[in-house]
Every structure is written in C-alpha cells, then in structure tokens.
Length: 118
Length: 118
Image (cartoon, rainbow over the protein chains, first blue to last red):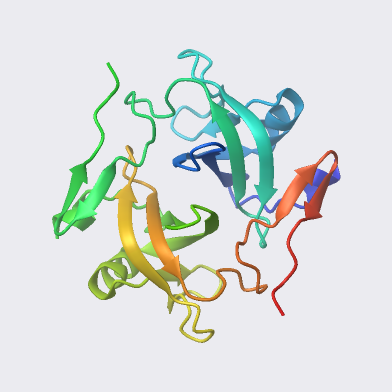
C-alpha cells in the first residue's frame, strides 16, 4: 500500500495524528498511530490509534462510544504527522470535555477553561 | 516556573506543538519543543521550536521572516502536547505553502491539493 510507504514512522514505529473537528475546526486531541492503526483507520473510516502506555491498538470510542468518523486525512510535508478531519460523536477527551486542550496559559498558570460535560 | 512543571516532556525532553491559525482555524504545522523552546516562546511571544534533525533551537521564521505570533497556548489533558493559536506571517510550510498538511488522502494515494505560493 503506497499510502503507508510515504509515511515516515519514528524509531518506535509511530507518528502523531491530530484530530480536528471538521465542522467547528476545533483541535480536539493528538494521539499516536502505528502502521496497523493507520491501516485500521483507512479500512474502517474510523480513527484507530496506538496506546503507548497500554501498548495496544485502540479504536477511539470503543468503550465510550465516542467514535471519530474520518472525513479527510492529510499527511504533512515531512510525512511524519497526520491531520484527521473528523466527525466526533460525543466528546474527544477522556475527561469528558469536548477537547483535550482545555488548559489555557494565563500569565504564570495553566487555567482550566472548560468544565466536563455532565 | 510552574508552567513548565506541568508539562510532561518525553524521554528525549521534547513535546509536540501544534500551530493553528487563530483566524482561519487551519492547522498549519506540528513541530517539537524542548523546555528551552517553551520558555523562549513564552518569553518572546513568538513560536520557538527544537529541530530534531539539526539538534538546535529554532525560532520559526528566523531566516524566512515567517514568524508565528502567539495569541493563545493550550496544554492538553495529559500535559504532553501543546496547541498554539497563532498569527502567521507569510506561510508556515518550508515548501512555501500555507500549511504543511497539503497532501490529502484520495483513495490509494496522497494527492497534493495546494501549490506553493509564487
């Protein structure tokens, strides 16, 4: 599959994948993919990642139901980062927030600007 | 600086930083920061990164003039990825494209969907 050949995985066989909401354009999360996750994502149309901490494949939303339907995929100039434009079911963050990027720098502190959804 | 203490750098002392255009909301690039780059970015208000290939600090735009003015910075739930909302001068990509993510998956190929600016 030439799609895979153009990807430059790192020394651990991984690359970062950025998930962006296709409607709001909000950046929701960043997670890692190995070759298998890329193939699973392309084959199924839903985001799959590789968990470095759990050392296993992971379909986003497999337990929470918060799946990510792929609308478009982009590879960057160096071939070492993916951008996923997705339709997010539910929330992207495991803290039950819409985005994982909910801590904003304000002066000398990271301030939580978004509360978990009830 | 407590801002730094909350960041979980990886085993190489790095973390990914995603640069997003604050106006268009387009994701422009992903690059790496070490602690010094985070401090330089916060101190100057302009994005600084660490080049893994050149093994050196790097102010974005230092040679091209294509600097990135920081509007907002966000840290994710795990503290291991930054999101920068920026005002981009010129183009973000070294190929002279607005974004580094100019190769779109179309079927079995990555198709270049954006030409370099003259």
